[in-house]
Image 1: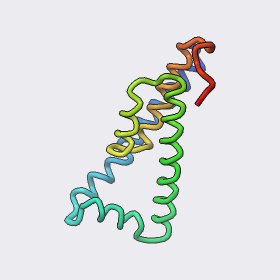
Image 2 (image 1 turned 180 degrees about the vertical axis):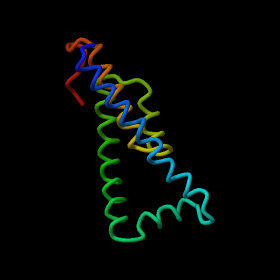
Image 3 (image 1 turned 90 degrees about the vertical axis):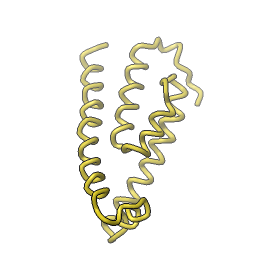
Image 4 (image 1 turned 90 degrees about the horizontal axis):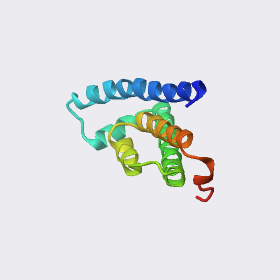
Length: 120
């Protein structure tokens, strides 16, 4: 693995590491409130136009990222692909997507190009 590849991998890992507390500090704070059901969470995500815009943006980016993880993960042979999708919903897509990109990058750097399929 080249220095450039190591820097890319470290960047993906750092993003995931920063995203975990950035999301879960707020998730835990929400869970400690009196109204903390899933529907309360969804309603809070749409409490005003700014929150709704960010929520919709996240929803569509998460959908595209999930599609990419499935298609690209199968193409390059990323192991345990289903775990990235499950943890995207349980933890945060901002944590699992960079982890997927890290696994993908490692797989691509350790696999000869002729073994990577171009079909999706």
